[in-house]
Image (cartoon, rainbow, N blue to C red; front, top):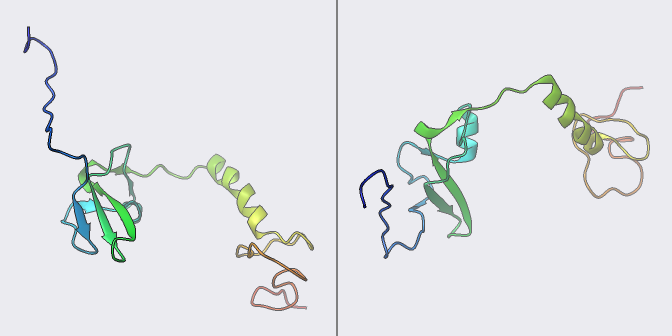
Length: 125
């Protein structure tokens, strides 16, 4: 019999499943993008987006999450930091001179190492 411990699901046959859509800077309070949540020290926490924001004449879309359902970011541990350092070192190390720079090197390099002879990252002497 219906109603005895069964979950009843309300289904709208006319709902196409699309999100509410807001224009740039028109989203209501309580909704934020992933970057805005990260700036607040939060993350979506497994919750699905509840709306979307479009900008650039609809060419770019950002999903919006509820701030009240967001959870705190996970802290950076030494193990995570060591794991993330290896790929970053590969992006910062010159393949020719093997020197590690402060900034990431450009993907396309030709000639001598980037900033090895000129540039703001050149070591004195």
